[in-house]
Structures are given as structure tokens and as C-alpha cells.
Length: 233
Image 1: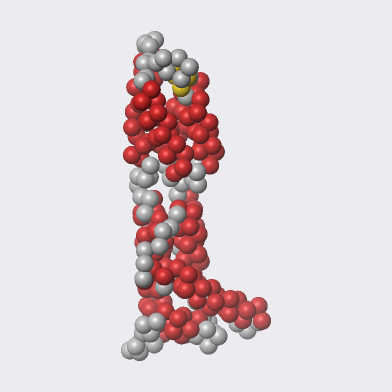
Image 2 (image 1 turned 45 degrees about the vertical axis):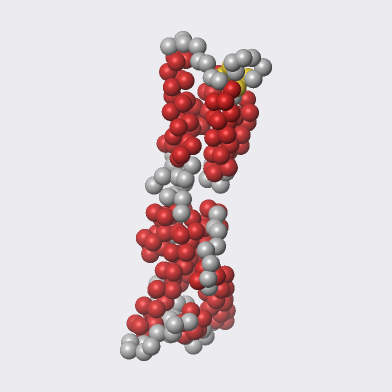
């Protein structure tokens, strides 16, 4: 599971280690101006890519890249203090890859279809797979409750058949008002989720950031837990 910014991170790591080896041997490190600019640009791209997962390191790297080289001398000199900070920051990012802790709380069915895509940086695809898996589960439930019946093709009709007030799927106790309200709310939540995240993707490939994918996956997990809960009517 490699982050999308590996194309910048790994070459930067290799440059850092090479410079560090020279410094440990007491050798002078000469860096030309063009190389300095390329290294700064690589750090800037990493700063942008990691700001969600590593907000603190993102802020620190932004400062580091501005202080890394002294352009007042020719050739530019490396600021050893900033270089040391860069060394530690890059090693931490590489050795503690994209944060996947939240997957421990996600429904296993959503983990199965979305985690690998998300961790490989395919955030839109991961979010789409999560919502598609919800629809697949709803079709399975409909067949379970009404074997032999034709499964509605339209997701709205499928949601109504399963989750409306008199729907087939019993996921909460509706003998009390609170349970009745919860059922109504869940019914509307499914409707809204499919209107926002499923139907548009039938017509176009909508962009999806890492943060947006996270939100959709968490929502899909909540919906899946509803679909896999069963309460006697």
C-alpha cells in the first residue's frame, strides 16, 4: 500500500541519505542551484499531499523547505539544522505510512472492498466501491426476505422496500417513538446518501479528495451496520 506521493518521497529520501553519508564522513556537500529548486519543489508537493494525514509534519516541512538552503553563497549551502529536521520528518513518513487506524472501526464488508484502494491513493474508487457494496447488500436482503420476487432496479424503490416504515428489514425496535423516529431517519439517510454519492457516479466520474473519501466510507460503514443488524419485529 504505497501513497501517491512516493514518487517524490523516495527520491528525496535517497538524496537525504546520500547527503547524510557525506556529512558523517566529514565531506563537503555541494549542491547546485537547480538541484536545490528541484528538492524544494518535491518537498512542496509532499507538503500538499500529506496535509490531511500528517498535518503537523506538513506544516513543519513547509518551514524546512524554506530554510533548507542558503542561497546567499555560491554554490548554495545546506542548513544542517533544517537538514536534520528533514531527515527525521521523511523517515517518519516512510516508516509510518498513510494512517489506517480508522479502518479498525469500519464494517468488514466495506473494509474488504475499499481499504486497499484507499491506501493506494485511489480515494474516489474506494468511496464508490463502498456505496456500491451497500446497494449489493440491499439486493441480497431483498432476495432473502422475498425469494423469487423481482428485485427493484431503482435504488429508491429498493430502499423503500427495505427501510420504510413498513419495510422488510427490521433493524431497530419500533415499539417506542424513539425507535420509530430512528427508522424514519435511517430511511432518509439512505435516500440522501444514494442521491448524493451513487446516482451522480452513474453519469460522470466525480473527483474525490482523501478527506471526502474518508467521510463517504465512514457513512457507508454506518449504513452497512444498519443492513447487517436484525431485530425481531
